[in-house]
Amino acid sequence: CAVALVMNKVNIPVVIGGIHVSTSPLDIDTYLRGYLKRPELVSQVIGAGDLATIKEIISDIAQSSLKKEYHGETPVEDGAWGCSRVYELPKIRPHFVDKFPIIGPILSRMIETNVTTPFLGCPYSCSFCSISSFPQEKRKFTSRSPEDFTAEMLEKQKNGANFKNRFYFISPDNLLVGGKKLYNVLDKMIESPLAINYTAQISIEIADDEELLKKLRLSGASHFFIGLESLDIRNLEFVGKNITSKIKKEGKTVEEYYSSRIKKIQDYGISVHGAFMFGMPYDYFNSLEDHSGKKIIDFCKKTHIGIQPTCLSNLPGSLDFIEGLKTNELIYGNPGSMDYFCSLTIADLTEPNRKIPDSLFNSPLVTFYML
Image (cartoon, rainbow, N blue to C red; front, side, top):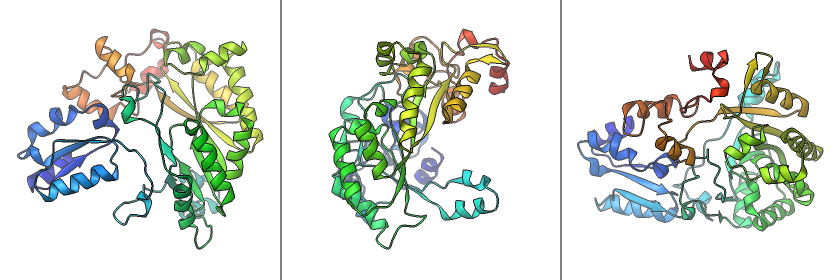
């Protein structure tokens, strides 16, 4: 918003896109356009900023006819990576490597993690996810050809593999949504002279497909981020995780089910990072030695996985957010209020913006966290 205000002062058009404006398109009118001298110079893109949409925007700017809103339909497409006017996503630097004695700081400056994707789209509607209320046509499965995807990475390694072109984060929300397309992509990667190690997000069901696990490892898969969310089946049901029916069918506890699948993945030489959400309705705190947070940490230690802890928060666009508006659950106010506006940066990604469940009211950790 601050950049748009400054640009508007000197009559420079601004186009805003991304997940927030796509799921909360009225926010630009509420918090920005009403305060601008020339609001017609601010536009927004709902959905993907694909090549066709960008071309239309550039053409409209050249003719001084910028529209208030544009709608993109193609999240990922062939040929975009080679365009001179298309900038790559920022590379990820592994600052955690700094912790290694002596050699750590040197390696962290040498290593770069590149970001790319063969396809995008998610058919699931987990209630906590910001895309859960997004129209299906805006999050439909869209893929690049295996040849285009592999060619992008081969181009970076045309002079050989090194620390700056070997490591990748492959960014679909869940690799498994690729289905047969994923098999084709992996086959192409395995056939090629690529020498990479990559991290990807994937669901725990991958452990049940050992043929696919083998292909993933052969193609360079080294680390998986897996959304485990909770060790309580009731919490998983609360957020609409599809895996709950399989866990119940096997008659296992969540811990038993997750442990067996994690072991299979690790047996293929792939490490695991588990994403867990805290502040769920069935989390508990009985004492400093007996609470759901400690149970999760003990589980991670036992299964030798890393942890990505987050708080259950009503992200704009999510089904939880919509329900929270109906039940007056947002503790930082409703859309349109300054409290809500400030919470977009203060709370959404760092702490819950929803009321703490009754089961955690007696936890001193909640008080310390909110301070």
